[in-house]
Image 1 (tube, chains in turn blue, green):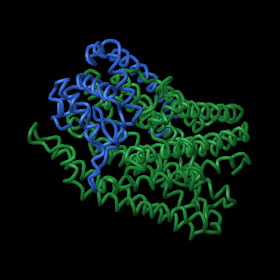
Image 2 (cartoon, chains in turn green, orange):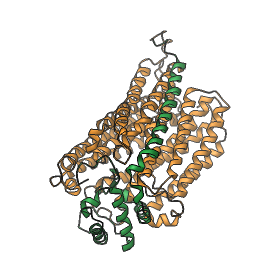
Image 3 (tube, chains in turn brown, blue):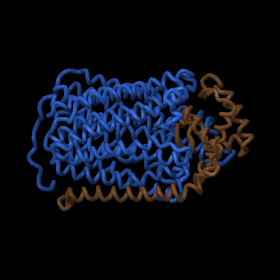
Image 4 (cartoon, chains in turn blue, yellow):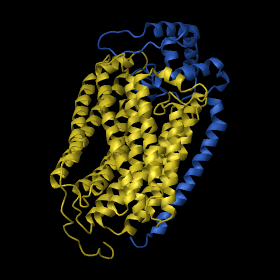
Amino acid sequence: MAERFTKSMARNIYLGGSAFFVLLFLTLTFDTQIRAMPERDNRDQLTEEVVRGKHLWENNNCVGCHSIMGEGAYFAPELANVFDRRGAGDTEIFKSYMRAWMNAMPTNVPGRRQMPNFNLTDQEIDDLSAFLEWTSKIDDNNWPPNIEG
Amino acid sequence: MKYESQRVSMPYFIFALLLFVGQIVFGLVLGLQYVVGDFLFPEIPFNVARMVHTNLLIVWLLFGFMGATYYMVPEEAQTELHSPLLAWILFWVFAAAGTLTVLGYLFVDYARLAELTFNEYFPTMGREFLEQPTITKIGLLLVILGFLYNVIMTALKGRKTVVNIILITGLIGLAVLWLFAFYNPSNLATDKYFWWFVIHLWVEGVWELIMGAILAYVLIKLTGVDREVIEKWLYVIVAMALITGIIGTGHHFFWIGPPPYWLWLGSVFSALEPLPFFMMVVFAFNMINRRRRNHPNKAAMLWAMGTTVMAFLGAGVWGFLHTLAPVNYYTHGSQITAAHGHMAFYGAYVMIVLTIISYAVPIMRGRPYGNSNTAQVVEMWGFWLMTISMVFITLFLTAAGVLQVWLQRIPGDGEALSFMAGQDQIALFYWMRFVAGAFFMAGLVVYLGSFFIKGQAGPEEEVRGPATADA
């Protein structure tokens, strides 16, 4: 049996198999990005404020401690649903919560995990809040299982 | 070592090991911060230590892959490297860029680093594992392109073996997929989707080609089994890796926006992802059973066997544990993910780099049959200490993850513990993980110590008769 299965057959499985699945993956990517995502990621709500908020999210490396939609570090709470958890789904409540929270950091409680103070202006905190609110509205197949993230 | 220019891999291996030490030091810092939250705060906040830990890992593995390539390609092609000078220049460029970037993380506030490197004009920073300033990303791209040019020129002018073809295909894939690191749309859902083109398609795609090629090369050298047999295995293994792994990317698309058909596709294909790793185990043990010589470098043999087993456990079994969508719904982004990540990276990629180092470095140091018995025994102590410690790190993180899911994810709203309340409950497991991490560090010190023991092994013990027609 070992002889019937030749090296060139193995090579053909490799080349044919990977070519097929690369093409399938590209097709599915096309379908996901072109057809499905515009319906699911609420891109019509993607305002200037949200974009600025995303840059703040990135420039302060928030994902180095937090997760967002379950991706990132697991040192601090999930933030894709923090708008629902801490803002009760209300823009104004969430913004004032965020201002209070960001300005109270770090707590300096001995032995507890510390979040740095990023010295953001009120406008920047509002931008960040807008980004997190927008993120909370992406259709993510109903993840996380509960409000705690 | 048949070609003088293979020696250029030596600085790559040495630098890789130095960065490995740095990676583990910061791993210990992180492990401690999990339980003593304000440790080193505000000097080194968790996010900075984590960036250093993960980026050092990626960079030292790349150094290891490059060293492996510079060592293997000339010997496989039976010709000198196209340009050893270029390899040296790129070494210094990469080493300088890597070091500067890590120093930047440590000594410059991240937002300030983004400002200093003009991130606003070409924003790519601040995404997990892709935290490097854009200028570093461009530098890495240029280093990889120069490296590929050098290696492809070498391979083209000599013998074209399957090992070289698979290795270089994997490296080209690595370079092409890196381009997605430069794509950072302002839509987070799109950003995340294509982010996985770098992350998943590297570690569960093209890196498996690189791993398979290195493993095949070392097994050819250590066992003396006919190249035809080994190459056939290699083709089948990398075929399975890509057939399962490409659509397997879907297991990352469950909860970040893409449509529900990915729940099925991702579950089914990623459930098959352990297959190539299982085949690597069977492959390595089979070839070693059918060996036609007893190579005196037993330490290298141990690494080669170890990497297949640990990759199968870490990437295969621990991956499968939480890859099915109904399970992943509860475990996504928990300590289960961390457990899997640690053992998979160690088993598949750390250990394959240490395998080729264990095989090639003694030869480059003028010890064609491997290090002295004493040195090999010490190296094997390092192997077992690091490997067993990693098993315990993984088990403790798994226990922490199961508890985290139980406390924080499974109960309904109002009953589930908050993230931090849950973390307090599982602190004991974080402490045990830290202790296991300290043992890992001890293992690394022992391993590095083995390089300083003099002497070499005697020649090969025996040569078995030619393999029977269909053994």
